[in-house]
Image 1 (cartoon, one colour):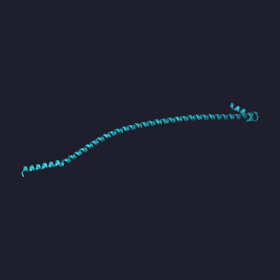
Image 2 (cartoon, helix red, strand yellow; image 1 turned 90 degrees about the vertical axis):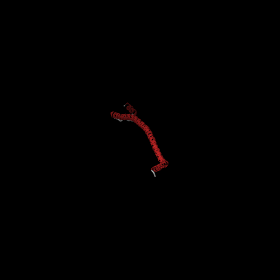
Image 3 (spheres, helix red, strand yellow; image 1 turned 90 degrees about the horizontal axis):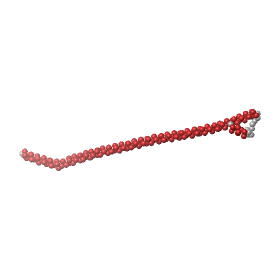
Image 4 (cartoon, one colour; image 1 turned 60 degrees about the vertical axis):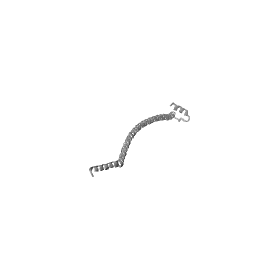
Length: 156
């Protein structure tokens, strides 16, 4: 064979190889590359979507946290107000009880004072009767002179 014949046979074999590659080898390779590119694009889109959702979720969390903080602050303020009201109410009750105790003590003191005066009147009347007995050297009848003794008690 001559060089020209070899060259022509090699060109024919090369063209058959190119046709075979284009027909059977190249389509699966391009399909695999296209599939890979589509998966990468989908992954990037999902990552972008996840990033957007994360940002949205972070914003919602911030809003909810600020609301929770505000609500907590409000509850603390309400609890402080309630505590102050309870303290004021307790002070008011204590003052009322104090006034009642003082009034009861004054009433008790007045009652004891009246009882002490009555007892003192009784003792003075008894002493007056004894003194009169000694002066008169005779016994004075308390039942007979009850009216006189009562007048003496009222004068004392």
